[in-house]
Every structure is written in C-alpha cells, then in structure tokens.
Image 1 (cartoon, rainbow, N blue to C red):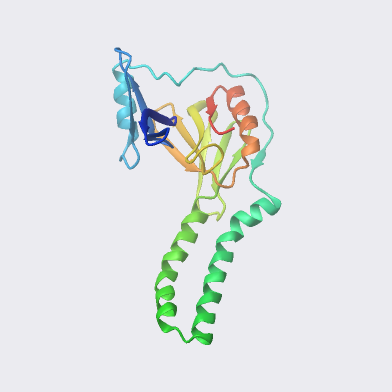
Image 2 (cartoon, rainbow, N blue to C red):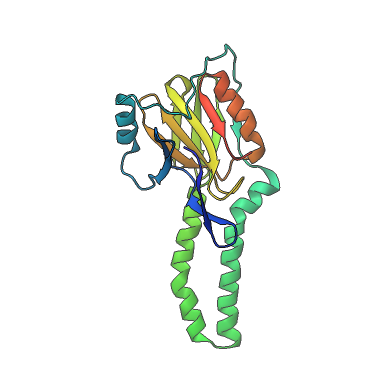
Length: 221
C-alpha cells in the first residue's frame, strides 16, 4: 500500500520502478528490499493472511486508539467548475471529434477519414464510460463511511470498527489519479479510484479516520 521506486539509474538520472496501488514491499533480514505489484491478482487476502499467520509484521500499519468524538455527516466531492470540467471534458472531446467527422465528410468528401473515425467512435464512448466509472467520492458518517460512484450505480459501505488500514495515494505523482486502498480486519483488500475527491480534503479525512481508530496514511498531499 505504498509507492515504491528502485534506485537503479536508467539514462540521465532517471529511475525505473513500480508505483500505484497494490504494491507490496518486502524487507529482508539482510537489509535488502524487493517490491512486487499485485495488480490483477485474484485475491490479495490470501497473501496478507499468509503473512499474518506466519508472524510477518506489516511495517506500514500502526494500531491507533480511537478518540471519543462525533463525526458529522460530510460528503467529500468536487463541486462547481472543477466538477463541471471533470465530468464534461470527455463530452467536449467527443463533440469536437463528431464535428470534425461531419466537416470532413461534407466539405472535403473524405469518406476514408469519416469511416475511420466512425470505427473508433464506439471505443471512445467506452473510454468515456470507463472514465465516469472512476468518479468515486467519499461520504463520512459517525460510525461508518461510504464510497459512492458519481453515476449512482455502485456504493460500498464500511464501518470504522471493521476497518484496519486506509491509504490515499496517487498513480502518477502527487495529486494525479487519486485512489484509496482499504484493508479490513479480515484482511480483505479494496481499492477505489477517487477522481471526484478534492485533494485539499484528504488531510481532514485522514484525521477523521485516526480519530475513529483507523490507521490512515496519505502520500498525495
């Protein structure tokens, strides 16, 4: 649950490595470290349970004592012009492509370009749908929190008492393609893209999790 980069030179000061969610780093007794991406693995719970049963410590987990505090119902979601451009920008691109197709066909009678773009249109619509599917936001309540999809098709609820660890990260540097990793006390792993979550609210959300006794970290401030 942490980005990791190998310190191996490649070219002019560049480094190769792996980053993003589902990255697991192993620290060996001889001081070496190795990182593996578990992206696409069927059930990460199997690995985490095996490590726990063999008394292998999770270095990025620190138990936290909850504080007796009340959390008001809060929805952390982009709003205003920021949300407008996040949602509408794919439609603007789609509209520009359609206008170009019609213009190319009517003015230049270029059927080849028109048919080529027409073939790519379903693929573009699929990418737009996939992009909207990534638009999750967070709702915090006093005893639980909910991850919701902007399209209203999907929703996941979690209780603080059943949650062991949460980690906010970014797939491409700080602030780009935010995601949230959740590990419950049964070692079941969840990962959600949070493209509709304002980056400025992450610090506040992390503090709420800690007050509720959940170990929360963020590497995308």
